[in-house]
Length: 429
Image (cartoon, rainbow, N blue to C red):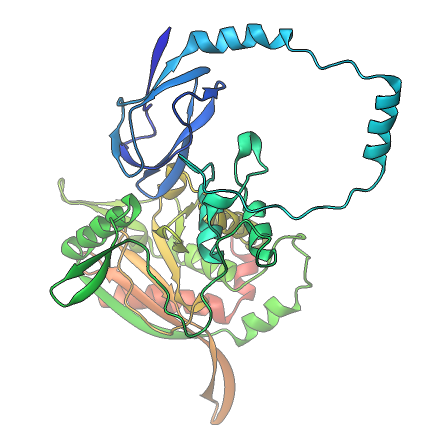
């Protein structure tokens, strides 16, 4: 009995997505709830499972296509799954003689030499690899079409990609490592020409189109003003380094960011105007009674702002643990749409990649955004003498429709006070 599998509801206000990859081929037998399509929606890449088991009779979408909720993805022959299951018991393994059993046992007990994996021929059809494996493959210069996956149903894992990249030349199932120094890096996209010479053309991804639309909406709607200042975090840095490695947990790293997030959350409680939104249609200011901080993350698919909820109620240790989980999701590009919703204020860390000051664009409909620069040692005059101090650059952009310069300065001064006197953060509820 043919069944049409249509794109299900994916979340509030999500009407369509771009097909990143089709994970099955016509003629394949799939099990219930097996992933069949990778879809990019807004800022999340998800694997869409099919609830029906059976034979894939027809695939109605292709890589790069935009599909809408309710659109048919596959046609499944459910009867084929039942007939295949009935035929399976008839296939019996041949009975082994005791001599053969002894030989098998000896072979299992003896340590076998691991032969290098031979290079696989280029795969036909879709490559069974998730977003994380694809990202690592791009970074390491591994050709996924030449890999045999060790995961379920032959799926290529991150470990498969890393193993291929680490294997010697001629043995690895990879096309090669990164280009040697001095060779040009070829950007992605299809080759082409314009009036002046050769170019490469790449279609904008769903994420990049969403980012572009959000940036245009923000800059065209919000009159941005940015205040710049520095926080002396010498004492904070000494406190942070005094915490033994692994004290918060074996996989939790205590950086400066949890202190900054706690300081911002506490300051927002005292300056609620920066934790508000504007309802343009009804000409109202909506003050949020919760503090959900968005953290701008640079991923291979573009800038993503996952949201950490109720930060004002968390301890610095809890924030550090949550940041560790967030970093793991960033590495795997494994954000869900829900992870990106509900923010009231955004923090961006330019210092992680270098740079001091910048003018961050506010994440509409929020009304402010704080950017951290790279902390550095500077000579500072204190009580008539010059001392080296560890200074953190801060750039606060705010919506000048409702936030005046004085209100923004008072908020930023409060954040700086918390960072310069970190003991206050330990007793702040």
